[in-house]
Image (tube, rainbow, N blue to C red; front, top):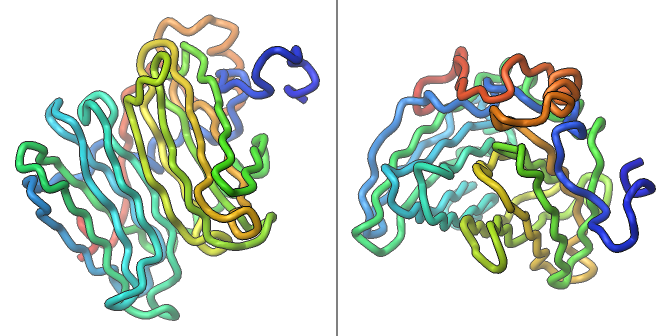
Length: 290
């Protein structure tokens, strides 16, 4: 629909508020009010053993304004790593990391451990919050994910370092990213994700590796201010790295145009375009999954 309306000399897809999918704004899926633990720099680590029956966890990482340099890994057994996210942000207070990790149920796959670590530099501590969802809440979140995925425009990435650049409208305060390969190969995916503000100014940089059909990935990235572009680079091989991703608005700036706010609220159900609400993260298996 949007592709047909775009002149040939412009990007085929731009993230704007009127393209928000139903239920895209969901504070309970990406809360900002999780209990936080401080983790020092210098390769310090926090580990969370996933409890019985768990298959989804929310992660929130921020700093007090210093650069955010951290790594999120999910281990199945001692040597098999099924999820990897390397985070490098210029300002961890302005652009914290908010992600939702889906993994195979511990009842069938066996014990799994979530590990969050910092970089070698002692000058970059961070604050970490982890909330493991109950099976009931996980099913609710998966239903919302499926509905959002179905209602949104998918962008195909084939592999072999192919690049997709997606401009983000100035009125988008944050964007939601969904990645899945269930319809295009059902393989794991690996990509470099960059959020640039201005020419070649990498404000946020992520290295993502995740299971494909059984482990869809979902996260929210802050894009305050103007001039943001997301650059997606597929780093798997040409024949093994096919996947699709969706990027849609999550929150709007308070000065967004009225017609954009109206379209966003009609599509997503949000009641406050400039909201900072974190929402209640609801019943869980404990603040940190214990």
